[in-house]
Image 1: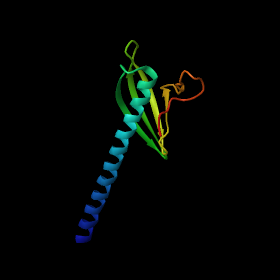
Image 2: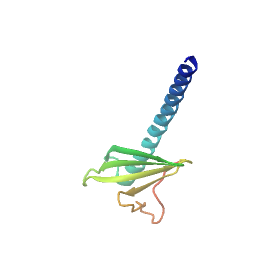
Image 3: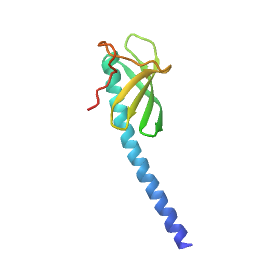
Image 4: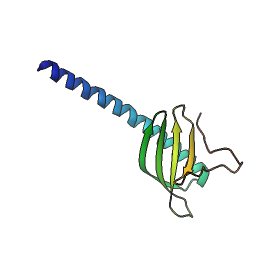
Length: 108
């Protein structure tokens, strides 16, 4: 009985440690995505996080974006494991900078 109790406590502590790490990484990814969105749409853009989906090596953040003089749109910000980010519409169309083919990304 003691082994079960100790094992259960160990599993609970390990799970909460992983959750704390994921929350920190999510905050960093959100800050990076908001910076990319502000660079693309302008500084007076409001964003609201709708959902986060984690896959092997990549995190997708779905954001509701409200540009200053535009209508609401859903943007998906994908952040890879190496820290590179890219923006796309909800339909999967990549948002590009004014320089053409280059995706908006300000990751180091």
